[in-house]
Length: 422
Image (cartoon, rainbow, N blue to C red):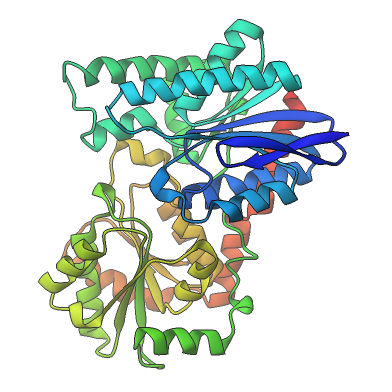
């Protein structure tokens, strides 16, 4: 028997035995995005290894297509069918509506062709397509909500309150959120805090309907034992960081949520207390902005900014003595699970972060894996730096990641939901 394998913006066939159970996995994030490579593709690969025929519908941003052949090869080698479509950003709202129409038509066609009995909808736009298919054809779907999307848009200022256009859009998606919860066969929250908030707003939803699966980490990729001392020394020479200098790092994107000015202030105080320390930012974007903020704090001469492919990230991150990240706290962020937290912990690195973001603070406190801020000022920063001395050791921090963020455990949870509803 033959089955399809992935091709960028298309599909072709390879030979092999087709697994019995077919699932359509729908993601408005692309597999070629950094997020897609860490939080979509590993799950899909794991579920395909569980015996499911995975059809992935994703929307790819042209600027993210750095290495589509690598993603394509991964899909091919695991018998995954990748139905890539182009993501449209302009004009706002209309472009999303256009993509939704393409998404729904593709999902509907796949269901007819392959007889899938389950749709895994990752995010709100994907859930719109899945809900429409469910109402028209009775096909069950999982609402993998990935946070309070409409509230994130409002909190970020993208959908201003009382705006003539965006207020109705916000209200539409809040109504749909209720429908997603009520009509899905199961729902996934990234955090226990997010689940509690949903149940408070929707008390008629059974607790068992919502499973908590945080953003997981590939603990085989992020494993300090797989990174040699020679590799670390070579990276320090490449970056011109002295071999014995402490390093405070930041891993992730640059944007409205991530409080880079406050982060640079923390790092400046860290250098004041650790005179030989250097700052390493591993970021795909915003390098000029980071440099400008470092200059304001007088630490640009100690700053190193790199963009790294996913396979390179663990080695760069492993240079860290401590890693810091801030996320602006808001209502929507109680549903957020920062991917970087698990990656940092998996390498046994202590972190400095802030409260008010999902389960982040609770996890740090449970595993003694860092220091938590409750305010953004010099007193709080200095206390957090001092509190690092109370952290668990490298082995214990990594063990915390294995318990809280292990990828295989997340895949097993998803497979259990599939088995129950497919």
